[in-house]
Amino acid sequence: METDKPYIELLTELKTKIRQAQHRAALSLNTEMLVLYWSMGNDISTKIKEAGWGAKVIDQLSKDLRSEFPDSKGFSIRNLKYMRAFADAYPDFLHEDLSKSEKAIVQPAVEQLENTDNQKDNFVQEGLAQIKKDSSPIVQGKLAQLSWYHHITLLDKVKDKETRFFYIQKTIENSWTRDVMVFQIESRLHKRQGQAITNFEHTLPKSQSDLAKQMLKNPYVFDIMGIAEDIKELELEKALIKEIRKLMLELGKGFAYVGNQYHLQVGNEDFYLDLLFYNFHLHSFVVFELKIGDFKPEYAGKLNFYVNAIDEQIKSERDNPTIGVLLCKTPNETVIKYSLKGINSPLGVADYQLPKKLKSDMPTIEELESAIEKSKDANSDA
Image 1 (cartoon, rainbow, N blue to C red):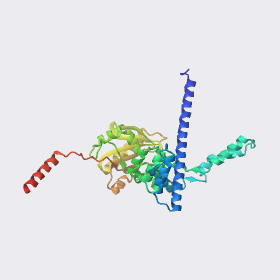
Image 2 (image 1 turned 90 degrees about the horizontal axis):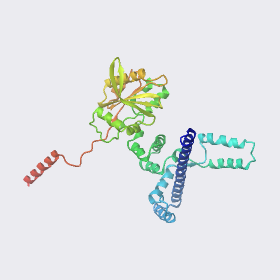
Image 3 (image 1 turned 180 degrees about the vertical axis):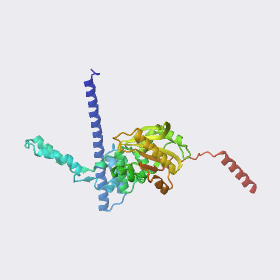
Image 4 (image 1 turned 90 degrees about the vertical axis):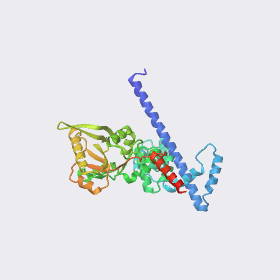
């Protein structure tokens, strides 16, 4: 029976339901904890301001709470301070009014219950009361989707509220772990997003141009061990492919890897483009070309050739125009803009950063010889 198709379908359906329930339970538990921590932090902050207490009162609160709840690990001095900071940072974490999107979900259900022919049915009335009860207060949706460890990290590392909401949004969109979020904060993603030099406004429709612009960064940060500033182009390409998961993380959501050294044949000649991707948000192929050193105008011409070849040979009628991205050193923005002017293909140019080569703790032979010579000179002077 275990091999019957109906049984397999039933098993698959049950597994899906269990996983969904587990996910909802985890989200619910996380939300309950955040509500508790915000409420505690808000009470602490309010009482300290009203009573004029010093911050030392938190030390005493921590001691008393841990004595009362010895099995709970969330009442350390440090965590209580984070609760207070959390409440101060998001005073509207709990709010009374439903957003438009939440009303769109709740209101039809309420109206359906109110208009039913069984209005006197106790079960129906209890359901109606419960929906109205549950709709207020509600937790701010985006904040409740992050773990407490995400939140305390954001409070530590991002002081500007607008910038913090940028990382909250990106963390939710991309399902970043805390460590990945830290990397993005430390690499200053909010300063890099949408900063590539492009001709998109002249080569793409407005809606697609804006989306494509936000898709690109400048610079890209390749945090991949084993590569350094003096690497060769082919070695860089191989290193990026070897660490494809890190590369995809840096490119952002929506990219699918197609291939590297992708073969094109044009007029009986063979050509190989460095990296080819497809972006499902843009519905476009995206060509990445890697160059060591500064931008040169002829690079734009070669990239334009590759983009035209992809459009002619691979792109379907359902796909949007192929986009080309040149990764190189970009010191002269004016030269780049002149080079892209008049090109009909959507092209962008962005810088990239590689890990700096770590200096060894061991001295080199030359350093040892120099130190010995200096020592001899010092002894002779004495």
